[in-house]
Length: 312
Image (cartoon, rainbow, N blue to C red; front, side, top):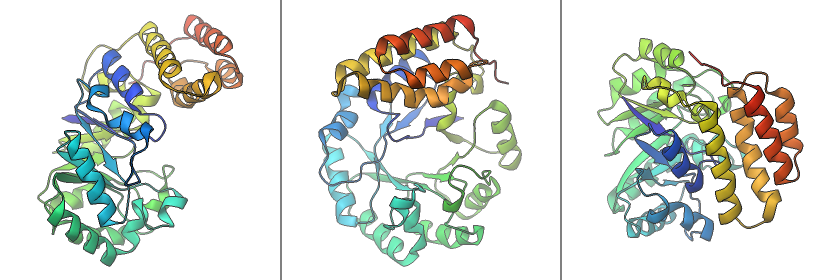
């Protein structure tokens, strides 16, 4: 089984990726949060610079519905040494979908087909795709697959939800099995793999599963990848050291002072707090902290007084 770390906007930046790999390891590949403009910002350039991603396999993700924009970005990324880019056809955000980007591109199949024909005929690097299974109905999935089967997709990552499901409705693993029946390209499963039990449930539907993408799961539980691989779990001191080094690196490498740094840390704790027993009152303190000193004290108290949940 190969395991991929999904992109999460604002969280899985190069700072987070390199420290996660250092402390927990386990992932075969990482994906960047999406790039959506032909002109890379300094933040986006920092995220894809090879020297910021040493020791990990990284695939940049692009979100656009314009072939010229996609191709310009792909050529720029080729200049950084990348040999594959990933097209985002999965983002369910209303503002993205309303512009027929992300999962919204699935609602205009003729335009999508023309877009794919142009990028696959001209792109200088391999193209993989991360997709949802449709907008509102599962019946949309088979016509979408008919489009995909025309093209030499490096890999199709299937988030087994509709756009309307966002992240709230259960994933639909049966739709992945249909993709395996219709396509000959490599396939990767994505959707609700938050425990070993959840992976086994998907494998009951898709027994020959070879690749899995995880997103919110490892952010909430950094030991998830170790459990899936049957490896010893890191202790809470290791999790604390990871978060402390993350705080230091954010403080050093980001502008904006304590407020911006704390915002980034709190965003991660929204997920990570789930991994600790009885974390409610500590999370309130972390969320209310306006100074790094107050934040650190709340985290120290949590680590001293509570335990990591054991998972399955």
